[in-house]
View 1 (cartoon, helix red, strand yellow):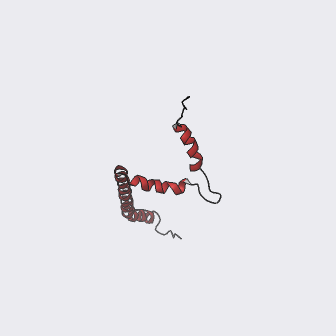
View 2: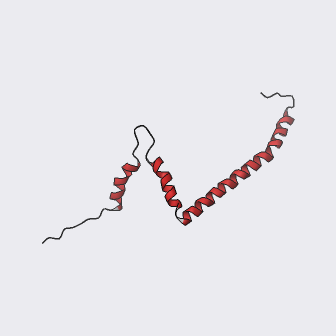
View 3: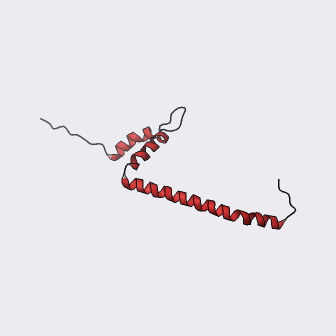
Length: 93
């Protein structure tokens, strides 16, 4: 009796089979990855460290937005006065 030889696919073989499915474009729509990526993020969020990292990133973005808004509110009167002092008779439309 001759033993049958089984070959397991390599990672490159598996990736070459999956790549066309990921990059597939619907005829009248966006690529499939735009629909799959949010589900992937939700799946990764079930992992504790990934959820903590994404929460930290979201908190940093909120802090940056608050700092930018505060800088805008503090700088606007100075910018208006500087423009007015240059030419007080200039009419802006």
